[in-house]
Length: 210
Image (cartoon, rainbow, N blue to C red; front, side, top):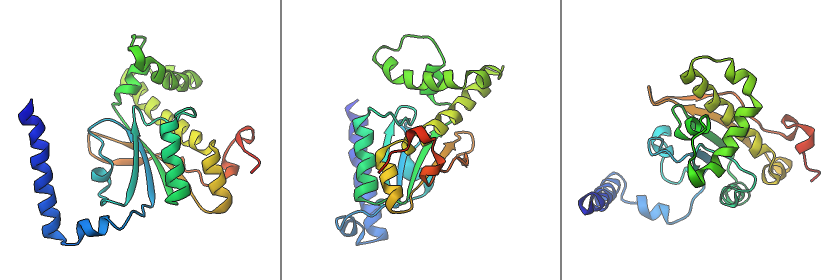
């Protein structure tokens, strides 16, 4: 176990040396601050590293990850990240990126007791219930799982638009929210074309008078 742990530190030294070899000013430039254009809200799954799959560099993407890339209106962690990204860093794009084969999605479709995680999975179960007619018309379970992954991303894009943080930003400047899904089978990201960039995209009941 300790050898596995130390491998990370060895890997860090190797990475640092390679970066300095490529660009002697790499770390000095990082100390000057960050100015990312993107906020990435993704799944905690270790197979979906945001910078790697988008071929972006350090400092180009602000990242928040949780189980099944959820935007929950009571999640102070997510809302704090969102506030900082939008109000302080002034990102231009927010990307909700899920992935096919998501364990959180699969668990939410079942009735197993997952202990404390039940509280989180309930949010996904509510997405399932909202779209139950469409989902249960899909007989193949894998196809149903994949469709719930997509529908969940749609819902989280809309949940972002329902926040005061995003709506306040829309009053002042351009800000786009996108829904993407990543596939392990080919390493490609698919744009689900659920982009939202103004309050008129949102149902009237969720619009704040700001």
